[in-house]
Length: 96
Image (cartoon, rainbow, N blue to C red; front, side, top):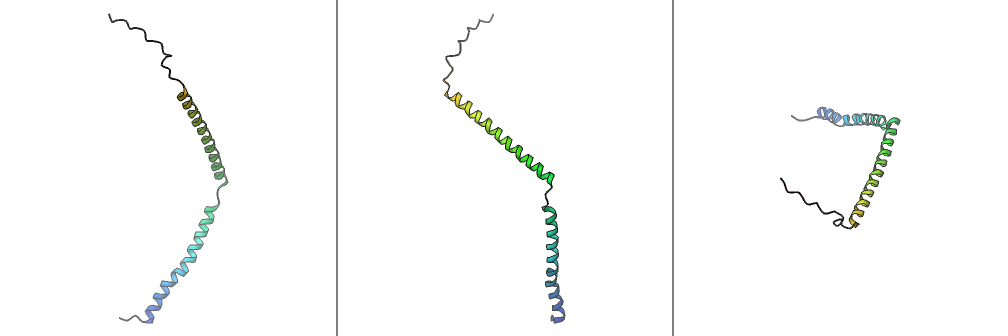
Protein backbone atom coordinates (compact mmCIF):
# COMPACT_ATOMS: atom_id res chain seq x y z
CA UNK A 1 0.00 0.00 0.00
CA UNK A 2 1.60 3.21 -1.17
CA UNK A 3 1.14 6.42 0.74
CA UNK A 4 -0.16 9.03 -1.62
CA UNK A 5 -0.45 12.77 -1.15
CA UNK A 6 -3.99 12.37 0.13
CA UNK A 7 -2.55 10.57 3.20
CA UNK A 8 0.72 12.47 3.68
CA UNK A 9 -0.78 15.96 3.73
CA UNK A 10 -3.08 15.34 6.75
CA UNK A 11 -0.29 13.54 8.61
CA UNK A 12 2.06 16.46 7.94
CA UNK A 13 -0.57 19.01 8.94
CA UNK A 14 -1.36 17.25 12.23
CA UNK A 15 2.31 16.59 13.06
CA UNK A 16 3.44 20.15 12.58
CA UNK A 17 0.19 22.08 13.17
CA UNK A 18 -0.50 20.99 16.73
CA UNK A 19 2.80 22.28 18.18
CA UNK A 20 2.32 25.66 16.45
CA UNK A 21 -1.11 26.00 18.03
CA UNK A 22 -0.32 24.48 21.44
CA UNK A 23 2.93 26.37 22.08
CA UNK A 24 1.41 29.90 22.18
CA UNK A 25 -1.46 28.67 24.34
CA UNK A 26 0.96 27.03 26.78
CA UNK A 27 3.12 30.17 26.85
CA UNK A 28 0.10 32.37 27.60
CA UNK A 29 -1.00 30.08 30.44
CA UNK A 30 2.52 30.01 31.87
CA UNK A 31 2.74 33.82 31.83
CA UNK A 32 -0.62 34.13 33.55
CA UNK A 33 0.40 31.66 36.28
CA UNK A 34 3.77 33.37 36.72
CA UNK A 35 2.20 36.81 37.05
CA UNK A 36 -0.23 35.52 39.67
CA UNK A 37 2.54 33.86 41.71
CA UNK A 38 4.96 36.79 41.40
CA UNK A 39 2.95 39.17 43.58
CA UNK A 40 4.19 38.67 47.17
CA UNK A 41 1.77 39.34 50.01
CA UNK A 42 2.74 42.40 52.07
CA UNK A 43 1.81 40.70 55.35
CA UNK A 44 3.92 37.69 54.42
CA UNK A 45 6.88 39.90 53.57
CA UNK A 46 6.56 41.68 56.95
CA UNK A 47 6.50 38.33 58.75
CA UNK A 48 9.57 37.12 56.85
CA UNK A 49 11.42 40.33 57.71
CA UNK A 50 10.50 39.86 61.37
CA UNK A 51 11.76 36.28 61.31
CA UNK A 52 15.01 37.43 59.71
CA UNK A 53 15.55 40.06 62.43
CA UNK A 54 14.83 37.52 65.15
CA UNK A 55 17.28 35.02 63.67
CA UNK A 56 19.95 37.74 63.59
CA UNK A 57 19.31 38.58 67.25
CA UNK A 58 19.54 34.89 68.20
CA UNK A 59 22.82 34.57 66.30
CA UNK A 60 24.29 37.53 68.20
CA UNK A 61 23.20 36.05 71.54
CA UNK A 62 24.70 32.66 70.69
CA UNK A 63 27.97 34.36 69.76
CA UNK A 64 27.97 36.13 73.15
CA UNK A 65 27.43 32.80 74.92
CA UNK A 66 30.25 31.20 72.95
CA UNK A 67 32.58 34.08 73.81
CA UNK A 68 31.73 33.74 77.49
CA UNK A 69 32.40 29.99 77.33
CA UNK A 70 35.79 30.61 75.73
CA UNK A 71 36.64 33.17 78.43
CA UNK A 72 35.70 30.83 81.29
CA UNK A 73 37.61 27.95 79.70
CA UNK A 74 40.72 30.14 79.35
CA UNK A 75 40.45 31.28 83.00
CA UNK A 76 40.12 27.70 84.23
CA UNK A 77 43.08 26.59 82.10
CA UNK A 78 45.32 29.35 83.49
CA UNK A 79 44.34 28.71 87.13
CA UNK A 80 46.87 26.78 89.25
CA UNK A 81 45.83 23.32 90.45
CA UNK A 82 43.74 23.34 93.61
CA UNK A 83 45.22 20.21 95.26
CA UNK A 84 46.69 22.10 98.26
CA UNK A 85 43.42 23.92 98.97
CA UNK A 86 41.52 20.78 100.07
CA UNK A 87 41.60 19.99 103.82
CA UNK A 88 42.67 16.50 104.81
CA UNK A 89 39.89 13.97 105.27
CA UNK A 90 38.98 13.22 108.93
CA UNK A 91 39.79 9.72 110.13
CA UNK A 92 36.82 7.44 109.97
CA UNK A 93 35.54 5.81 113.15
CA UNK A 94 35.72 2.00 113.30
CA UNK A 95 32.35 0.34 112.88
CA UNK A 96 30.82 -1.05 116.06
